[in-house]
Image (cartoon, rainbow, N blue to C red):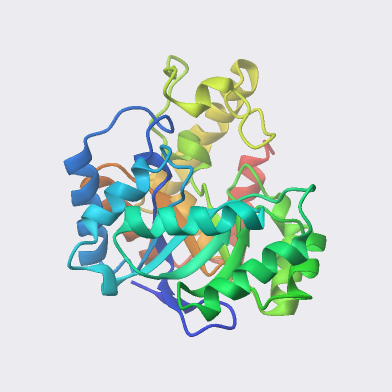
Length: 304
């Protein structure tokens, strides 16, 4: 495993982290609780040292599973969770997360989504209070714009931004990545496999149940799973799959290797529900992807 320092903190994390989104009910369809717990154990055994979850994942059920999985192994990982923006809700969210995760502190606590109706300074002051109380070691945000990040830093020393980033979504490269690099913020990239599209397991016949958020078609303002776009993306995935196979890797490993080959990325979050998935994922670090390979794969993903 490869490890990187998270921003201006003393947290060191594996470049591939365990993403808890799929093990929250109503996210990526059904899964077995015991198998999900075994996935977390296997990830730690393979050198994964960061586990990311959120109060929203399965309305707290995702955190409960993580809490069960980390019994006796809490100190083996950087534990991350996320909550509300409004100060009057933040304290309750944090207390709820700590209880569900069966811990008295978080290594990193993030505001999950920005809220234009809430002054950022107020949210940051609440974050500083949590840190003073010893309930969090560090604070960060998720899905904030570069301008919002700048406003946060006026009040509180954030150490990271968490943002969606994959071969089909390179929007963060425009403003967020340069800002984070300039200000010394860590970068946590979620959705590296484009929410399943870049696993190479989907076909034109793939459908999504009501308990799967992809059934809406649009994901984070991208029409990834709307029928016409979905079929177009699958054609590009077929070409990417060939490129991966030529180098002795799987499609999922290509997707992960492409993200972590960007030096601005500290850790990418690979969501898994089964131990064999994390075993496949960690092999992505064996692909030392060059800049020319990254550019070639990005051109294929763009439809060139």
